[in-house]
Amino acid sequence: MHRNETKGFPGGIHPTDGYDKSLTMDIPVREYWPETVTILAEQSFRALCGLKVRPLDHVQEGERIGDPEAFMAAPLHASVTGEVIGIKEAENQGRAVTACVIRRLEDPKRETMSYEKEGVSLSEVDSEKILEGLREGGLTGMGGAGFPAFRKYETDKQIDTLLINGAECEPFLTCDYRLMLEQGPALLNGVRLLLKASGAGKAYVCIEDNKPEAIENLRKILEKMREQGILDQGEELEIKALPTKYPQGGERQLIQSVLGREVPMGGLPADAGVIVSNVGTAKAAADMVLGNRPLTSRIVTVTGCVKNPGNFLVPIGTSAKELVELCGGVTTEKNRIIGGGPMTGPCVASDWKGEEELFYITKSTSGILVLPDSHYEEQPCIRCEACKNVCPAGLTPYQIDFAFLKEDYDLCQKLYASECIACGCCSYICPAKRELTLRNRLARDLVKQRMREKAVKKS
Image 1 (tube, rainbow, N blue to C red):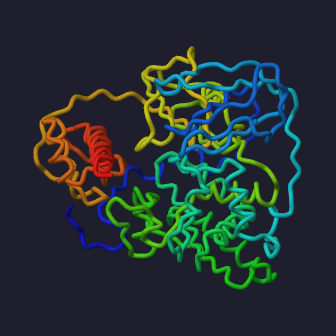
Image 2: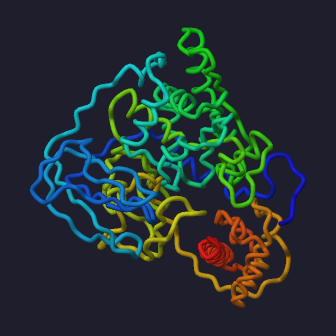
């Protein structure tokens, strides 16, 4: 791997000029409660849960309906109060996934609690109670990965720093931004809970400097907590403004930017003494530990080529098709529908006219993006090394691409394909429009599989 001598993390790009986020960043979050929800038993890849309910069962919002059956899974809870009307196989991004369909029979009944309005004392809450809340509340990483939150905090590594990721560097998405503006007290109370659970000495809430209102809002709330004497001894928090550069929100890149540390190759943030959690996960921690509310809903950005873009607080299992219709539908016939942001989200449909279902909202769904379709053909690589210069992992993507196409997987491993973070920078910058991200990601997964198989044979 090559190294760039630079402040923060190497490489990176500036994919937009801000127009993308301006579509939704000034629009307050709206609640939407559909008539039915379809809750997938596999909220992220290989995160399978066994469903505990059957058709005609009556369930309450927050009731546990699924138990983890895989390392990557977290418990599932009913996202609405109603009747189970079916257990079916639902198509999700080309895969058939078992799902529980619930018809909503009651409107949600929620009262604003004290932790949502101001800082609260955490002196009676110990780390064991917080960890139990993370486990039982079904909390996962809400920035996209969907990794069970409690597993990060049950590490046997010595943790000295907690980073809360509010960078939201992915273009078009503003769900985290609106969360930081509208639910600041609950968010910061959640950060304090995660700080206590981690055993770290300090927590940084990390926000790109293109979100000054969010930075100022959280700083004011934190200062008020200090003035009121709410923070316990040892609760050291800081709102950290970072330069706007994609992928600032990547775990490794965030650690490099804030702390100047590198996560060892093949390692995890905990190996560098750090835990990284999303702002949405911190808010969900406060909801569960302080409000006894499992993770059953989230904010989703619906934007791009739709009539009325916006952010919506929706129950898990909401139809993406319904949300696009709620925004007035698509405004261009030649389109691509992205589940998430444009750099890392998968394309779930092309030239979509609204007839078929797209997908169902999971705990890690951050957005639904409609983009105008653009057709292009790959051209031969011109060896410009632009992909190498922008790669935040310090790789040479075009060389990995050549090795993968030649099926030289030993060379892929020697080129450190296992360290690819699939951020999309290489494909974005490539003048030949090569599918570098796709093939580098495939090379990464294949190399990692070979490494696992080799480790098993040795054992």
